[in-house]
Image (cartoon, rainbow, N blue to C red):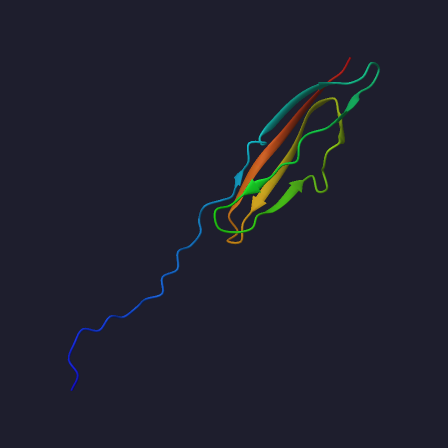
Length: 102
């Protein structure tokens, strides 16, 4: 017979519920003027990036394929960035561009 104390180790898994975080480059609000006689403006902005504490982040954008530089019509235009981590946590950030006509 064996006597003594037995410990049972349990594997514990903790779910990642924390979404990625956008770096200091988002959200973005830009106000630009169209060139004289034009109703649109070509706009440049810095690359958007995000990080996550435990995994790689995948970035996507709507409208699909939107990137800098881009020509926007007069008015307020929105591009939305999404950051998704390996646990499918998702964060979003918007680029709002307002083009003023001359």
